[in-house]
Image 1: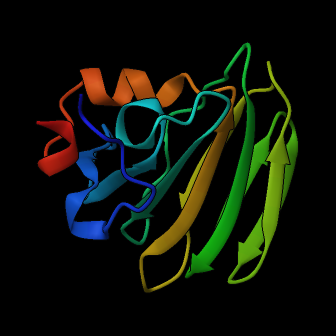
Image 2 (image 1 turned 180 degrees about the horizontal axis):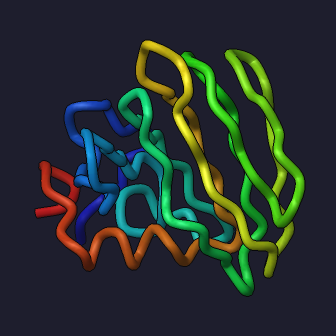
Length: 134
């Protein structure tokens, strides 16, 4: 029987590149069912190079939370444009179209929470690499 861990170190996270043209965009899946057994949420850290904007998308079943660690950006939810900076938190209800833009001269780094988990599974399937994703 393999014992699950309660702690994931940054270097052990399942890591991959987000499909955003024009720069570097990285995700790290830290806490989810595969890494620690969490069944009701997933916690990731994403980083977008300056000037990048994600594809507008929605999650039909998941509540989505962001916590900005560093940098500046814009999170658009439907027609609302929210300017964000370090320390800001943003909630996106299920089914709402949203996108993230990095607007400063430094990368936008932020925590992502999905509840229930779901998009994290898709990210793993698209090619996460690293110890936890092998």
